[in-house]
Length: 272
Image 1 (spheres, rainbow, N blue to C red):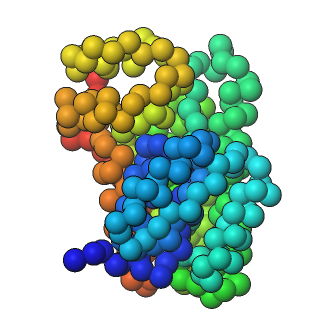
Image 2 (spheres, rainbow, N blue to C red; image 1 turned 90 degrees about the vertical axis):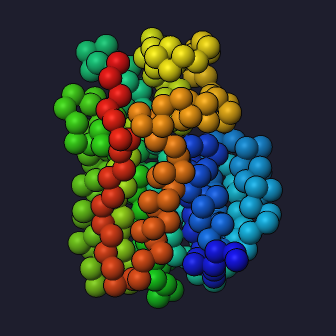
């Protein structure tokens, strides 16, 4: 029997071309939602529509830089206009450039702030306006991180701490609306998110897991390699689907239920 929990609902997912965003877009569509997906690569986003051809939901995609506020907010308006409703925004897109403050490139800080914070605010603002104007029941989901609570988690952790703080503020602002705010804090997940990590760090993980693959900066890990890593270390690294299931759980609760924060960690801590 097909899953129809989100039939008639409209969702928008950022960073949907890979990792948590891709898994979430697929999961919401499989539950019957019409999902508007955005990311950096149109060719990869186009594959999502094919992947959900057998379910009640569907995926409509457009590749653009979410730092472009007009395009991002316009995509939300398009979703609401074409479907007549707007119910779920998943602010998933994020960037991480690890490194010490003393040696970092300030432009990398700016990129993290622009994507992780400002774009999230831009999308959340428009989603609130559209939901309120249409009287739609809705959820705004922010993908934060356990790095928001960690010691010495760098500028990335600082941006995620702000994401969590923004979620708390949004929750307060929407108490009198039929709009719930969800803050999801994943632990270590195997995705292409780590493409900006140092080769030493990633190769140490790959070596520890016995995988014969040499990582280079900016490298995109093929999905089959990600699956191999998950199979090799199921208790050390989460799969993107683990986070997508948490999002689906939150957005399918009755609107009077406030699932505000979900922390999803691997069973064990990854020690390098």
